[in-house]
Amino acid sequence: MAQDSLVDRVLAKYSKFRPSEGELTMYSLDWADSLTEALKQAAGEDRPIALVIIHAQYGDIRSGHC
Image (cartoon, rainbow, N blue to C red; front, side):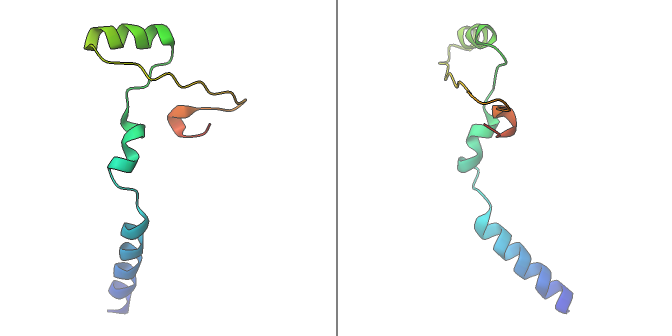
């Protein structure tokens, strides 16, 4: 059917532009709301901390708006 062909073309284009799992890794990190919370979690898991400071009125790293 023509409808199926159109769907297949749209899905093919989508798969070309869709970010890979590796490119989306930043959004799966464990974000903490405070440095104190991050320090506790990092100490408990023996992991490093990456400190991100957002200097914007409406910055929200969790939603990707910074």
